[in-house]
Length: 259
Image (cartoon, rainbow, N blue to C red; front, side):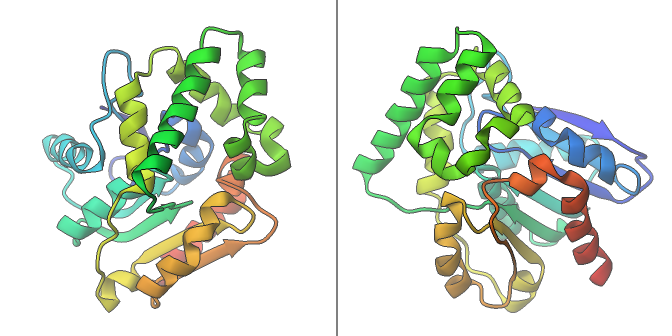
């Protein structure tokens, strides 16, 4: 695990956790904008570093909190997770509720599927990565954005996700099957926590309404009726975060300045 730092350590801290097969680079646009007012730490998880394996949300959370403790960081203004990173955010919220003022979930999936579908997702993603990881970047990108599942996430805008896809291409050169399996588990098997009203008020769920991830929103709303749900019409997976980080920062500022 590695932490990339932006901004002045004297400012309040924002902690961010990327999605699957991605590093700090996928969040660099937002990180640099937030660094004008905050000390920003972006995690690159094991499994996305050479010679490592992603262990799943619970052990990753324990390792992350240990790394922060070494750096004498015991509280942050906000924790933001992307996709699979949302499982780690929820692990922190569940076990250390006072660690952060706000818990921000970008494109949280939290699907629950039968083992057969989980295995199918693992196999499809691993097959895709294995087949194209030694190809040139243009070939990798084309295969990715034309994949059936990826198309449901990115819609017709996949060609514009260069920052994210280039980052995934680098990680794909060395990512292992066990890492893929644990990332998929964080999407389809992670048991969502119970929240009291205070924790709901401090939780933010951000979705592009056209993304596949948005299908779980109603279920999450049933669990967390007092949480903050931000829903962007005609938007896909991490679309604003990736393509318009300045606008995305505006939503973060609104939440943090409101409370």
